[in-house]
Length: 385
Image 1 (cartoon, rainbow, N blue to C red):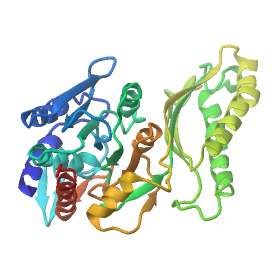
Image 2 (cartoon, helix red, strand yellow):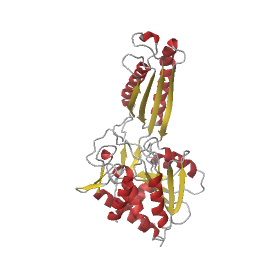
Image 3 (cartoon, rainbow, N blue to C red):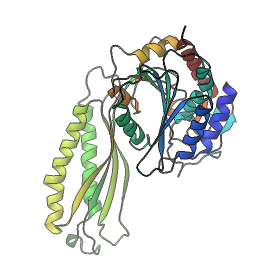
Image 4 (spheres, one colour):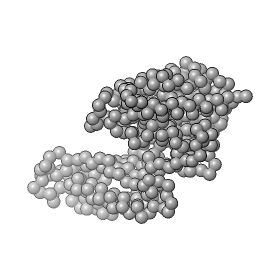
């Protein structure tokens, strides 16, 4: 089974499914493998029909199934120095290298390799395979999928989201909010700064406010917070604007993200920023140029995964793996979206988040084997007796 998993992973890695590009070839490949073992296939496309989620089912057409979930997109490799081709799987010293090996095509490959095993058994409850698009840019695919699922009479009972956790059970993580802010000013000659509205300068004031809030959030951390770091974080990811040294910049963009541990923190930050823009920055800009503007685009606001006292997914994976404890992480996943539907959800998958988004990303072969062992035990436990 491990050899088959590596073969499937090799093909998955060869599809360069960076979020900006289509994932349709990968989704069709996965659909073909699942259809070959008799799975019921649903493809749900985005508005441009350039991307798709897959929702596939093996087993009886009833509620209460187990959902195995992974995202098909990967982050870019631009400006990273790889020692190998990032879209060609390389095997070395017990590790498999390539973009997406741990985040998170390794888990997808393992589930596809195990599909014939699930299909060969008379399952008492269905197993669902869910592979989504655009998780890395706001969980867009999963958000579209849950809008479809929420109208169905029957839902899965439990979900395992296979993000890289070193195969540890994760029952809680922060949310993830991503924003792009556009500053529009007035261009002019650099020798006459008062005659223009320098968008870069106002963007700088905005970023300074973000950094001020980032420090203030440390004081809002609740006692005994299980997260690392224990407070809501803010990160400025990109600042871009201007054309030349001697031209007043009339357009600047700021991309930033927030990882809230509670919705109150997110509301607090966004409230302060709205007030700062509307009562401080915009009046200053428009005194010089009335058409100046600040526009905020919400890329994604994805809720976190909340630990639950009773969680069937946690109990299932604990029984399969023999783990007696669970963990919390600071990175975000699609898990909270499934939990919000009433599906018991945990995160557990092969690989380490320390390798994700970096050059020479890898997953250890031993981690893949542990994942396959868990899935094989899951298939056995779901067999009707």
